[in-house]
Length: 227
Image (cartoon, rainbow, N blue to C red; front, side):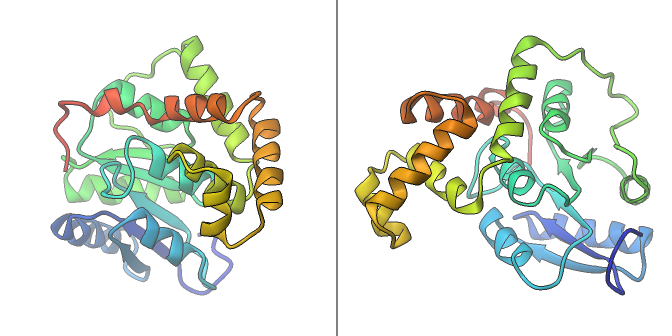
């Protein structure tokens, strides 16, 4: 364990109660002494992560109610870059696995895996390995994947407040509306927007929204069987 506290803590992020229970059981099989905490949404997960006690590992379902595509993974990776995040998903397409890894996931476990395999995968990640299914064959990154990985790296340089502003920009809010939501002055919002544009290396807020929206990869998830 690399924990700096007495007991390791895992965060299970899944909106499906039966699978949260299954993941909890797999965690207990791998680490009987571990503390597990559950979140039913990305918002709830971020609130828990902001608490005083740190977590050693997050187990994340891609299909969450308050995000789409890889947005949940991106939020966790940008806000908590040192936290290993393992995707546990019903989406098992090779391209989805590749993209998840390119965005910094510490592993990808199919929900179809047996409990013993889930436990072994969790143990493998905690020992420092990147876990992927045995049937997965790595793909050579194409130019598009490289560009997306570069944008993820840039996003990791944003502060939590800048990330919130960026999310509001994606919702189409104006500076005045963002200022009201964050309870700050419009001048502060303008400063945040300028920093966002600089860090993302884009020239306008519209371009920032377009470039970041490319990371959602919503088309990858259409007509795929998930939980």
